[in-house]
Length: 472
Image 1 (cartoon, one colour):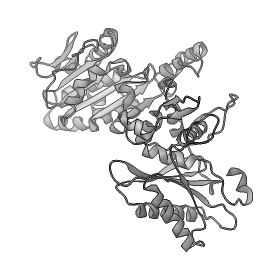
Image 2 (cartoon, rainbow, N blue to C red; image 1 turned 90 degrees about the vertical axis):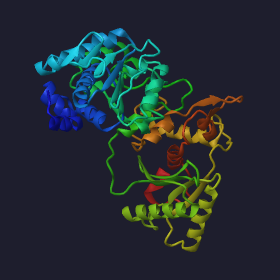
Image 3 (cartoon, one colour; image 1 turned 120 degrees about the vertical axis):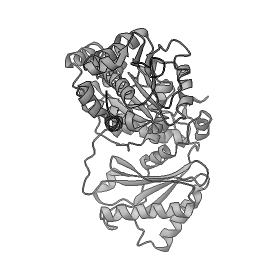
Image 4 (tube, one colour; image 1 turned 135 degrees about the vertical axis):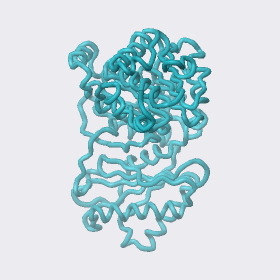
């Protein structure tokens, strides 16, 4: 069907394969997904209904079969209807679009195979109701396709994890984000850094009828989980014990930032680590925009202090801060463990050269310290509540708020913020789980998240100047 040169080209160019061989035209999101499968081992897509997920999955099946020798492509979905009536029917439809494809790839009710190689070169449909649905597939090139992945039980994924240890194995998961736990949910939250991740909002898709969108709005409202899952492609609001829901984080990251010549406020935060797997993370905030400046593993405290000073000098010069007119920059540092050394070093530098480092105002912060507050049990919970309030688009009276925080699009940050749970103490106060408790649940240390908490923590400057006093 294709000569060797064409196969080698199309193996790396799936969009062109779809256009030239399948005779279809992917939309921009479908093209991005196709390219992701070609160049990444793990691809996960959450979306609303009707955006063309099953179509792109069918294209991927055909492309992979035509550009790899003796591949195996197990496909699964939670129900027979989803698997056979939708996905498998979609494969048949696109094979018929090109007579050459239809002659070379033989479609049956449960298998598509290369002519002459039914047992060695195939895609197969198996419902996820069977525990062994994805077991027993061995080849140099294996592609697992999991449709409506949010509804597939975690046990189905276990053999996939083992198979993905081989270089030629790939995984494509697509689905409406209906569940707030499980393999698919984790791929968009705590394990997001391992995946090429896509979110497709039906309101922005040319394939979704606006009548459908409006019908859901009229029936359930834009604030409903029905709208979130079926149209917006977002997970339901949250589990009862998750403190900050994922949608708040995603919305913040996708907000456009319009920089000012001179920000009204600048903050720096540093979560300090020294050795082991934990990271030292330095972040900064200019008005509503938050950015991660630097991440380091195994860095000593003197170097961390130097990095903070360098960032402060860069910000001071960039925005032409004036000691006679402008407030200093609050630098908030994790003061637990080795963080105390960073605090001491920063204070020493300012004492030795107060004119050069006039902008430096150091605030040591202890995570998890008990506080006297009506609602929050400790400092970490209080900081999480500050961040959550900044992310919310409406105030306590239901009125829409201006954008107060734009988070950096960082995969680790998403997982850390959206995965942190909370409970009530015996005294009726909220308490988010500790870093130790998160690690015991298999989550990484929330280093990026803690640095963001620090930059958002409100502090009282020792001296206020000019028109910016109300901003502090």
